[in-house]
Length: 301
Ligand SMILES: Cc1cc2nc3c(=O)[nH]c(=O)nc-3n(C[C@H](O)[C@H](O)[C@H](O)COP(=O)(O)OP(=O)(O)OC[C@H]3O[C@@H](n4cnc5c(N)ncnc54)[C@H](O)[C@@H]3O)c2cc1C
Image (spheres, rainbow, N blue to C red):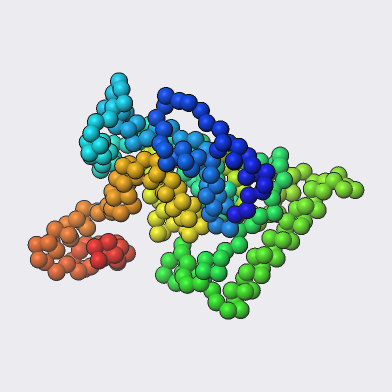
């Protein structure tokens, strides 16, 4: 990720200013406010603003007149209880606003998360930068043989080089034509809103994305998961680190109950009970399909 000198200056200027407030702030968030965290080759995530902290969750849960917090152990215990029992509204009292720069095909997955407020860079109004996501060698992977929605090992040798060359050449050619079409040098120049249609899905876009902690956890649960596509997962993982600094108790509970935990079906739970009682349970006697059984085995192995 290369920020221009002007972009870095704007970030530095904002980081240089400070305001006095009575609102709850989090030192670790103040320290990282506005800073660009690189993701992929040209992408980034920046925290632009946030509201609330761990104590705001307790404050809302207790519908308190004051800070609403008690002993640290009480607060952590309450947050874990809320997470464990899906009592989600106290988590909605915390909000975060991010600036994200991401390839368009990642943005298409991301935008499916409807419970957020989004404002995207306008390619009708502005000219897109010549910035395309080109996967690193280890991310240039073959189609998975077991999962239609996944990838296998990295491509090797001539094939890897050929694919890389095509990705780079196609991006360059499409952008050359985009520039030529919008140019007003000796011609009228095609409207930007039309010229953009020949740009490939690996071009970068940007948006401001604001959501509350409950919906952010839902996003992270799905997108920081091993089943999520690598290119969105790396964004989710970056955001996980930011959230860990922001609301350590809430993130700890999320990590334990959601990221690290699992939901068992009634049949799966029955199998666990039978196994604990000493029975040898097989797929045939489990009542589960092959796929369910494979996933269940993966969970308890
Ligand atoms: C690994 C993976 C693979 C995927 N593959 C595909 C795919 O092949 N094709 C595809 O189209 N999508 C795919 N998706 C996207 C997926 O189906 C969801 O659209 C996406 O994850 C957003 O989830 P969400 O709707 O729960 O989130 P949000 O839109 O943030 O909604 C959060 C919650 O709010 C509630 N909600 C929001 N809007 C409504 C509504 N209109 N009606 C009812 N309840 C609502 C629901 O409870 C929802 O869970 C995939 C997602 C993942 C993680």
